[in-house]
Image (cartoon, rainbow, N blue to C red; front, side, top):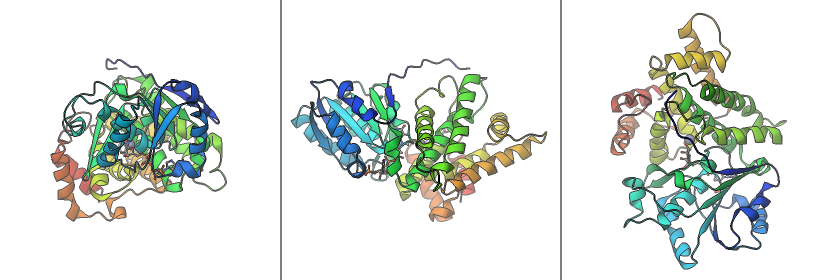
Length: 385
Ligand code: NZQ
Ligand code: ZN
């Protein structure tokens, strides 16, 4: 196992009715900015619950944070923060809203000249406004990690700071009942790939991390399709298991002490930035190709994955790896997400552009060994066509 330091200070309030807890979590004298997206929270009752919980607080609101939040939208929040001396952000929404709140927070107290530097120069984030989150879409883990991804002019740029982990997060599975099938699928697949990118590398004998990861993968494979089936889709226990899996998938726990990959995510960001493909759908397209191209380097873990997650047995390791990749693709198909670039109208004429963007963003040494050069990324993208 590798050395690690691990601290996750986000307090989780999980379960039905827990939105009321925000009353006590946000200091009574705080000036709160409620930030949200395109309005789903107004039609599913979440906004009303939040307003009730904030009845005795001074609060303002900023809405319109779009999926894959844009720099320009997020910068617009700076006016109200200055005008009203906001000192607490409450993000109510999916990963885009929580990520957006993180950038708003970092930009509000940025010491440099231009908050764009937080992204493009990865300038250090030293001061932040505290954030609380009410999560409405289980997927990203943003509600209890320090990561954020912001888009400007077709460039999707991640940044991260431990200071930006929300102080608390409310996870009420009932609020996920209003999600479309597309967003349920996206969430399950995003969480699944988060686990894979921290698991499918090389063994450092991290038995606890491996078995936590396998437990999360098994849960998502078991519960994900049920959240799409007519007779089980309203089942709150299924929603609860998916929601907790997604948080645990990217809250730092399974990452501690193990190598990590993230090549699927970085290549995927170029597909969202350049072609507007939903985040999770870029991952279901790229991950199988990464598994195939890196099957030798990932051999030991692929066999472990085949045996423990897909219960494959026998002495033919190559056959087990093939079958495990095939079953992974089958799972994605059952979740209704694409597994090839041709499914989303991307063809060989687009490959050069994708590779150019990776180069422009410095994504030239990806993977757990840093050996996914631009040539290897090209091989991955071409295999995914
Ligand atoms: O904007 P509203 O009206 O709220 O609608 C949203 C949005 O249209 C809707 N939605 C959310 N909760 C709902 C709901 N609709 C009905 N009922 C509900 N309960 O769903 C749509 C998509 O929301 P979004 O927040 O964009 O989805 P997601 O949570 O998948 O977040 C994706 C973003 O997170 C980033 C992605 O790159 C992308 O920008 N990621 C963030 C990560 C992190 N912070 O650690 C890691 C991930 O790998 C990912 O990169
Ligand atoms: Zn993701």
